[in-house]
Amino acid sequence: MDDDLHAVHDAIKLCAQRWTLEILTALGQRPMRFSELLREIHPAPSSKSLNDALRRLRDSGLVHHTDDVGAGTYTLTAAGTHLLPLLSSFMREMRRWSDTYRDGYAQPTGADAGPA
Image 1 (cartoon, rainbow, N blue to C red):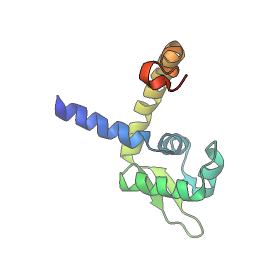
Image 2: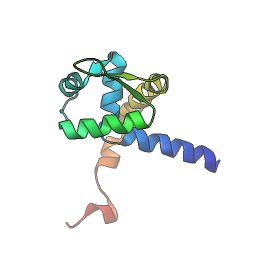
Image 3: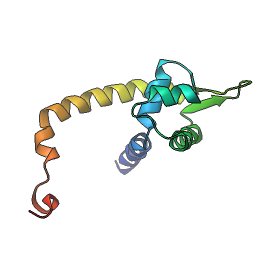
Image 4: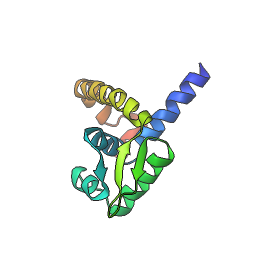
């Protein structure tokens, strides 16, 4: 059981990093150049933030970068392509859960409420 939780925790930690969901969702539509990703993602990340996130996703094996003459193209790897429907389902279900329970978790209570 601990190994299962550890594996899931690692996957969630990767997906929860800034710009990961946005990049994977955008690249799930089609391969894109860096400038296209900047235009596609809203609100737009800084160039440095996007570059750092793309490097992290390449290092994680979810995104591939092809150096074309003039401009490189980013695509999902097989692992990224396999992850995308799982993320879509997860996001859809989390949205449904959030719509139902947001009032309960969005309001800090007790020690989390801060000064009155």
